[in-house]
Length: 485
Image 1 (cartoon, rainbow, N blue to C red):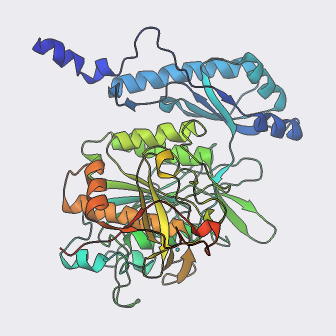
Image 2: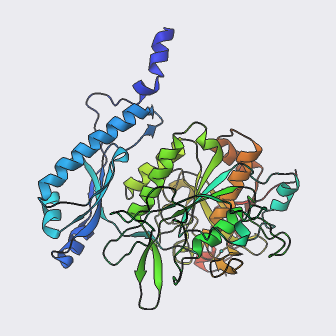
């Protein structure tokens, strides 16, 4: 009996799908992809193909072993090889992420038509590789009472915050460790040369990504770029450290002793005046896949937190967007299953649809960050929040108008606003908690924030008929706030 139960709980056994298993999810074959390809005629467009079965973890299946995960990747690569050979005889420059069953490839309209006609049932999703986000825009650690935590030595020492954004100016004075050295300990760059988008990753490969992974300087933001300071600004909020030589007392981020892993996921488009950074889906997925690969290391979850201050340029989703973004969902869920918290901004379309959430914040189990202003008692007017019953994963509010580091000089600071600036407050708080309670799970950290590390905020306009519709919000929300320790 003991042997039976031991076998039943074995990770390898739990990861096996039963004979006859059917994935009942409806496949999505983007009509937009066909339409764009038709307009481009013989010019290939880049599409993302996602297979069924890219998950590494499920509550019932458990965690795949490294051997099973590699075998799954090999199987997916064979499937992709067959699918692509069926649609084109010319050499195709494809970027494979085989374990999670994703490939990005440039196909002509005729090739795409053939792919759609074949309708391989193993394909779950096909879409154009286009921006999932243009970085949104935002501070105040005193509003969330971080000086209370700092005074007790809770500064996130030993933690690492992974900033997936427009890159980070690693030599900024706010991002030094107190000894004049940069707190950026690892860099990476994932970008695409696709259509009108250009990759400026240094030493880039055929896919537009810097090689090798970890290349020093690869996450540096592009100059002459209208919004490329976004990642540096976000990083200062999450992990900037007080530097009295250049800044006033108390001017620092939520987790001042945390290290920074800077990941640049910007592909750039020229608008006639300047370059603009956009975050293409495939590049964000590639960055997440690199994080997932690293997360297999023992105790990785104890020392890392992911911040994604990204948001879709539409009104957002009214419910979980897992099926609409399967490649990104697989990548994010695999990281979360390892015990690493993933924080994303809720979005800045609240003036139109506050009940929605931007991508990737709408993916299940992502920790969503909404915004507050002033003393923290007022919801940021542009903040998405999302109807609670339609999304899994918590929502925490944090300051959305913030002065932080920028990129023009080594001491440059600026004000930016948006839930992009709320997210690094929340990510920094998770890093502080993880350092204070080594080994704590994401669920337990979330439970502490919900019960002890936040205050309830009821929109004063809920029952006031004089308020505009976008100001009314019938749900109680939580704003992060460190209690007296």
